[in-house]
Length: 318
Ligand code: CP3
Image (cartoon, rainbow, N blue to C red; front, top):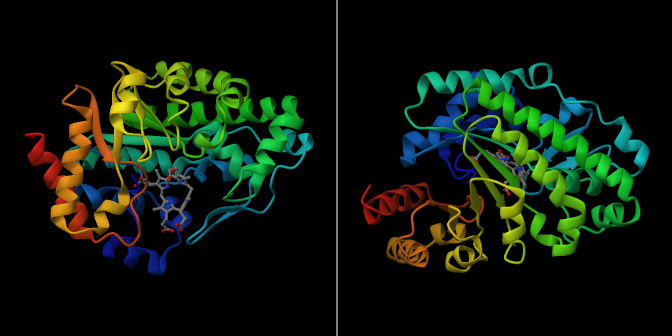
């Protein structure tokens, strides 16, 4: 997760001359950055280099990605009228560079390519909060006090992300991952009322692509059954939920996760022991996509990331 990024010297070198949005708008550069972790770490799949905010520019959102913070929105959504002003999303017109990068990658890669998008709630949280948030007060106030406008916003984002992900598979993406990164901040009731119908529709539409989908969120211990109900062929589990706990609630549904990204800051014997512990929690059940529980930390030593991949391959006999 965030397997291409600032922990890599080659990525930092590219970032000296290009901003993140500049990389994403340049298909050659995007393909190069996407391939970096496949070449240097030996991971089993590539994930498209983009950001969850990439499709939002085309919908009329003005934003900037601030280093160390995340996306900051110049024109946040503060009223029902702002929701109406969000423009319809057209992948071919708004993100031709993403689709071109996918086509290039499909010619070059020998491993599968994962396409992705932000989930409606997580995108809405940035749009309403105006940036990263600690307490999600504005977005919760919006959903609780203006439910009709909220559902309209979620419908628009759901339609846009369904179109975006379908366009990614048409361009060649082999699997799709939906990041609902901040969903764990909702109560079960809030999830059921304000998110579940939209998330269900998103995954129902993605079934048309015939590609496997991964549904990821953080802090979702209390929501796992609801995430499963919403959809996804596999459920991504973050570091705070033990895999064994997730398995008990999800039954035979495949899981992805969940090594703590901070473990990669430790010495190699600690990394190997922690990887063994994650594998032991899964207890050899089929359908485990080994991954970090959340994004790679910028201070991760590159050799530790490579060592972790090697160790997973060694311990799982691959
Ligand atoms: O995983 C990958 O390698 C693919 C690339 C990817 C990026 N963002 C590139 C990126 C993916 C899958 C994302 C998704 C994303 N972006 C999410 C969902 C996943 C998650 O982390 O929960 C979210 C919430 C965002 C929003 C966002 N964009 C944040 C919080 C940040 C970090 C801000 C910072 O400076 O620490 C970004 C910027 C961003 N997106 C970076 C990368 C590699 C940081 C590197 C840079 O600035 O060059």
